[in-house]
Length: 232
Image: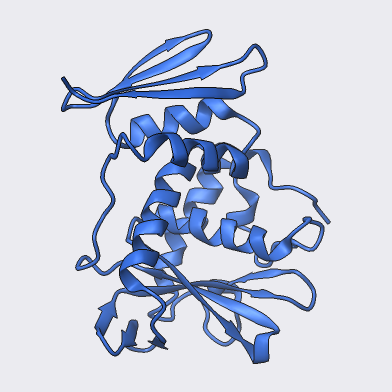
């Protein structure tokens, strides 16, 4: 029973965290608190406002024993089910990059301080491998578990680089993946194609439109101040 994610998961999670948080925030804002109905056969997610397509069953989390079960390992579905087949890319990604959480059938999250939060982190991080627009979850089995669906409908907006939101996103991301603050900043800048300049005490990112973000670090490599200089 592990009390933390593997080194491979933490390295990838840190790299993609800030961008994933930004995209998930946008997804939550657009989808809103509407009651949604999933149809795994049609791969749709429906509400009073319309239908979203391209959903994928990532997996489920049990509140009873604190374990995650990938959709491809669920005997009720299997790896070839229409709503599950896309997750093969996550498994392959895990094999290539040594991310055991993406390859084990049922990762045990019970040793984490907040197993439910760890499951959400696992789902959102895994969802980034598929691209898409966000992850939706809902309670199942009378609240004894949660199911997580990845949504790839292109009618949903895709987050772009936002220099004003960057400080908040970076601070949030390092709180979720605290093992390598530089990896968090580097990954966010690279995700949006910023030109990087690295120094021992700072990483400077310049966007295509001329906005500059400078993230400073202390002697222990922890993120300190994040300053933003909008394009002049």
